[in-house]
Length: 204
Length: 204
DNA sequence: TTGACTTTCAAACAATCGTTTGATACGCTA
DNA sequence: TAGCGTATCAAACGATTGTTTGAAAGTCAA
Image (cartoon, rainbow over the protein chains, first blue to last red):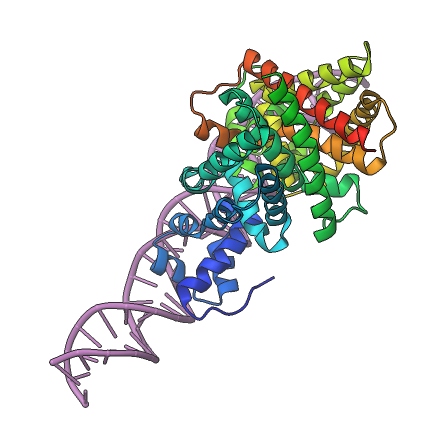
């Protein structure tokens, strides 16, 4: 599991910290395990980051998600919504991004100052962008309340596959969310949501 | 926070354990804190439950959720689906049931044997029941894959409000999910999902 | 009341935690 | 080379953890 490389000690510690924190949580992670994986001395954490808690704060970084809002700005609203759901699902189900997702889920249960940072820097812009996208895709003007609920409905469907992954695995052991299945799932969410959205818009 | 009452030592320990485990997780929870809240001696946990881990296993109990499958069997499929979503959302947002939900979320991140138990006893029957409900509400025969995805879409929308509660709170500080707001949210999910479902059914 | 069994208790145990220490090695300027 | 600040290291610190212990208290049948 130990990832290789970076030569700088701080960077090695940071990389190892993201791994261990995401695997065991803040409480479950030990400074000794982080230093072992980073192949640095036990005192390195306190020397470079002052404390375990400060290291945790430094390890949290969710800016990659912001890319989703800037990426695709071409095509009509429906096409961009489709692209957004596809990209979002791909990121969610990407094994390589698993540590960040786990860290996020832990923040949802036990929020620290890190969650305020993540919400402010990443999630709020993402909700704003998706809200505009949904409004455009709806065609007619939707009330703020309905718009918010539709955004939640879309995100909720996507996040389910990440949050409830452990349950899905146990319910359908033969089901694997590879690239193909993930794309098909995103397609379903798009069709399901567009129909739902248009129904809400019609009765607005 | 300490709940009052039960006279039996084991029961007092169990009740306190559910509180503390849900608040701090398995690692974060301490036997001393559990015993303090239960107002029993420190040795009580090991005497009555052998170990902290065995106490955790004994503390996990999700059977209440099963009631949703048995409760409402009256009315047409759509009415029963509506009732299910309403009841499910009510249970999810119920403050009193918060400890169980937190325990569940922790299991999603770090599955223990407890999750297998929960999935087998509670979640699998719930998915089966909802699957039948969705099939009936669709009218025409839906493929197993589409049916599963529609069930996931509905559950995902509901669970979002619980799993992402900490985020919603930060995005919309003035929004509170009291009885009225929860009911309105359930209503939205029902309308959104029924339209989505009928669209899927139409193209089946 | 006796005696055996269960339950409770304060105290201590061994292990592990985050953190600190002081010595040592390194890299650079003067 | 000498001197100084930075980085690394093995070792230890104090605190907290889950667990164990042996005695005291309680319970109840004989």
